[in-house]
Length: 398
Image (cartoon, rainbow, N blue to C red; front, top):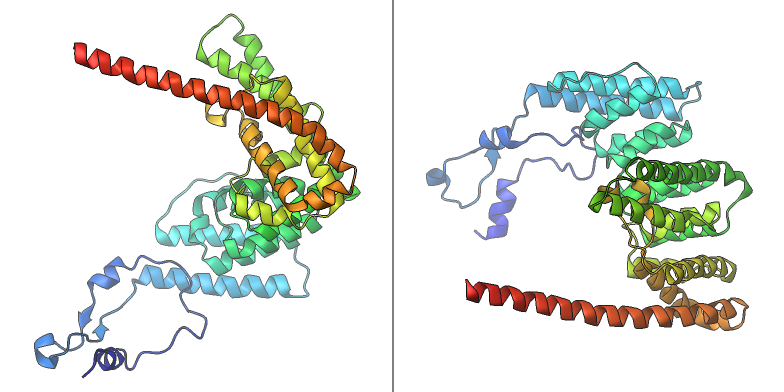
C-alpha cells in the first residue's frame, strides 16, 4: 500500500470542513484535546504507519464559548444589516455585554467602570482577545456605520483589526473625513501601498469638510509643546541627561510645529510610520498626480531647510522624553529618502513644471548636508576605532 493510500484510508469518514463555515470560529486551547487522542486501531494490529486518530473532544467550556460566539455573530450581523432602528448606544451595550459574559464563562474576572463608550473601550481592551476574526470584522463594520470612534480607536491600538480589514477601514475613514483615526491607523496597522496612496492623496488635497479634525490635531501638538516647556521651567535649576533630553524634545517639537499647515502635520505621521518602506512608499508615490507631488515636495523642502538651519536637532523618542509626538517627527534620513523617491518616479514631469525650481533650491542644501554627514561619519569611525584601541590597551595592561 502506498503512502498516499495510507493517508487516504486514515482520513476516510472525515467530513470536509474547508468548504463551509466552521462551527467553532474561536481560537481555542487544543492541548488537552490533543493529549486525549489515540489511534483507532493499535499499530501492531493494523501494521500501518499512519492511522486515523479518535478521541478528539473539546472541553464543555470551550464548546459553550464557541457556540456563544457564533450565536452572537449571527445576531449582530442581523441587527447591523436589518431595517430596524439601531443606535450607537445599543451597539456598545451589545458588544460589552457579550464580552463580559464570555469572560465570566472563561473564568476571566475584571472590574470595569460605568456603562458608556468609555466602558465599552475598557471591556474591549481587557477581553477583546475573546473575539474571533469574523466577529472583529463585524464589530469594526459596526463602529464605522454607527460612528463609534472611541471603540474603533481601541480596536486599532489593541491589535484587533485584521490585515484583510485594513484597506476597507482606511477607505471608510477617508470618506468620513476622520483624520485622527487615519493617523492612529498609520501608527498601529500594517498598511499596503494602496492604503498609503489613498492617505497621501487625502492629506495632500485636503477636503474642506475635514478641517475640523485638523483643529484638534494642532491643539494636540500645542499642548505637547507647552507641556515640555513647563517641564523645562520646573527643572531649570537642574542639569544632567534629563534636562538635556527635554531641551532636545522642545526643539524637535518646535521644528515640527512651526511653519507647517494642519494637513502637513498629518504628513509627519506618514514619514515616521512603521509603514515607511522603500518599496511600498515608492509604489504609492509613483501614482500621485503632479499637483499632489508639488505639495509633497514643498513639504519635504520645509524639513530640509529646517534641518539645515538647526543641524544640532536630534530626534527624541517617546521613551526618552515622555512625549508621544516625538515618535511622530520624521528623521532627516526619511525626509531625504522620500525626496529621492519623488525625483526617481516623477523627474520627467518635474522638469515641465515650476516644482523643478523648488528642487534646484533644495538640492544645494541636500548636497551640503550630505557633505557634513560624510565628514561626521568619518569622525565617528575614527572615534570608535580609538575607543576600541584604548580598551585593548587597558586589557593588556591589566
